[in-house]
Image (cartoon, rainbow, N blue to C red; front, side):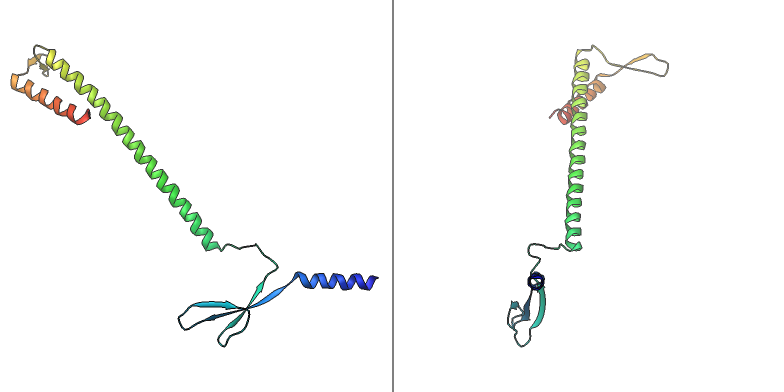
Length: 146
């Protein structure tokens, strides 16, 4: 009885480490072929078929995957920065639009425009200067109020 158990155990142990003979060769066109029978220029490859379903990923493949993920994250961060910059620019344009419209209304309502000199006294602006300033404000409105 004990001999039968040892024989069965030995058979089970032997069947657990099954190896198949696979041969690899390259034909005249340069194509690689695999087969279970040897050919003249074939080389024997030992393949352990007991570990089915276990695929080992080489470090280089994992590193490429990691680089790709990092590159994607960098692209996403760059895109987010670009969007934030555009948002700030749009906000600045909106503010400049409102300020330009307000200033133009003030210029149009005022009977005269003036500047202050170094002593703090009012110096009235000429009509040409007033027209130039209002034209500049209209240009700003066109630029910022799109």
